[in-house]
Amino acid sequence: MSAAAPRLIVGLGNPGGEYTETRHNAGFWFCERLADALGVRFNYESRFHGLVANARDAGVWLLMPQTFMNRSGQAIGALARFYRITPAEILVVHDELDIPPGQLRLKFGGGLGGHNGLKDTSAHLGTNDYWRLRIGIGHPGDRNEVVNFVLKPARREEQVLIDEAMERALATWPMIARGEWNTASTRLNARPAAPKPAKPKDESRS
Image: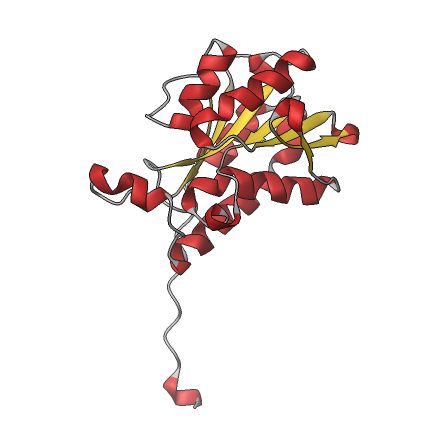
């Protein structure tokens, strides 16, 4: 497993206002928050088929492909080749059906889980050996409903959990930026503690 610090952070999603709030755009949400934290702005770069930000102080590029999900690799491959970024120096952030809202998984390589954005990324990079941050969005329970599910906004209670998970991921950014992947993975892959039950109200004081 490579310990190289990342040079390219990619958020997967679909362009266009009609997709902004949909579950499939969780990768975009993370990239936008990371850009805010790093104090950089995105600009469209036609040669890279996407919105690009250069966080010079952090030594990383941020990319949100504007090619639609199933052609994400076109943008990733173009930027990676131009700047000679190896797959092991890339972190792809995406929504994950097999993880419930509020949970995350940071992993290197492995299977693609049927995710079209990852399939195209691997096709253009020629390997599955890159880092992924999987943001749990839950599963509709019926595989025939998956397309409809990912292209709709999360329910309010789900969105709260997803947002909290993203904040935890952003809190580990300094570790990831230093290439401390194992430490970051241990923190992110742990299930969040269940909320403590509310204490019963003491009626004697009312």
